[in-house]
Each structure stands twice: as structure tokens, then as C-alpha cells.
Length: 202
View 1 (tube, rainbow, N blue to C red):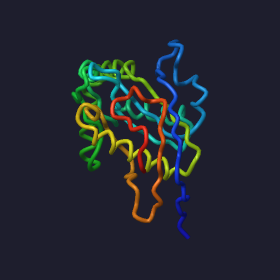
View 2: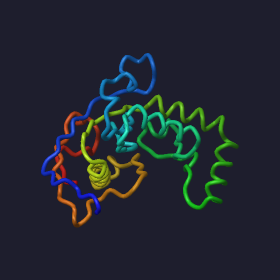
View 3: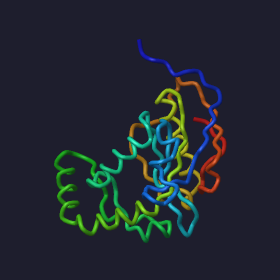
View 4: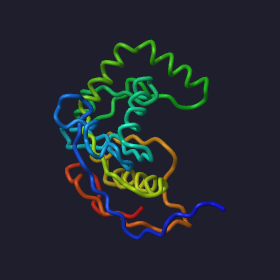
């Protein structure tokens, strides 16, 4: 018998941060008390156009473990790599588009990545140094996290190009299915992020 989604009416989403990835900064994500929790997190980038969301991610594993795996994949060229100076100006400027498509296509992309590794590695380091990370612990069914992730991405896109200029999304579709009960989400602690909704439906 398939699992059913709990009939949740309202969920509070409290964001903590911003955190950095670097050691010795005094506010590193690896030492944050919330890093042992599961839930949602944001990669946000301070730009001349405001603090913009680059990625919104849901994790059913502790944040520190999910981030570690994500950074490993990033360092292997599985994710898009942009010119850091362009990101800081609020513009996407891909130097490497990541891996996608057929196995043959992925092999070519991986070869392209290896051929340009010194240049790309430098840009990756600059991008990671820019990041402001926000964590929102969420103790609920992983499907709820997927729906909230999708709803945030949809809201940021609908807020216009200023908010969504850097947004990238990966992972399974999370939009609410017809048979799923609507969820009202009340989000706080992330008000400086452009386009981040305070209250929304998932």
C-alpha cells in the first residue's frame, strides 16, 4: 500500500544563517548547531542586485553530510560552474554547464571539464567563497521538503528576473500533486534574500 502524505495545514520554516563554507570565519556552516539536522538549505550569493538565491536544496540527511556530497559533486564538474565575478554582479556566466543528457554526452562534458580543470577549479573556489548559506531544519516527511523546495523555486521565478537571475534547480519534481493536501508555509529569518516569500502554499 503506497504511503500517504500527512494532512498538514501549516508549517513554520525558520532559516538560520548566513553561514560560510570556509573554516576560521567564525560563522562556518560546519560548526553550526543546525548542521546535524535535516531540512532545506539555500546557496545565496551577495550581489550588486541584492542577496540572490543560487540553489534551493532539500535534504533528508544531516545538512553537513548533504553539503559535503554536493561539494564533492561540484568539484567533479557535475554542476554548472560560473565566472565568480559575474555571479557577484547578479549574472549567470557558465564556463562549464555540468553533466546532463546521455552517457555519451556526459562523457564529453567530463572530458571538457578535465581539459579546463585549472581554470575551472579557480572559479569554483571563488564562487564557494562568495556563498552565504541558510539552513531551515524541517522534521517531516521528505516529500514535504520536496514540495516546499519546488514552491520556493516557483515563487522566486515568478518574482521576476532580479530575483531569479542566478537560480538553478536540480533534483526530482516537487510540485504538489492533485491528491496531496495543500500546505501553508510560514517562512522567517531569510528576509534579506531577494524574492524569498514569507508565506506561501506548497
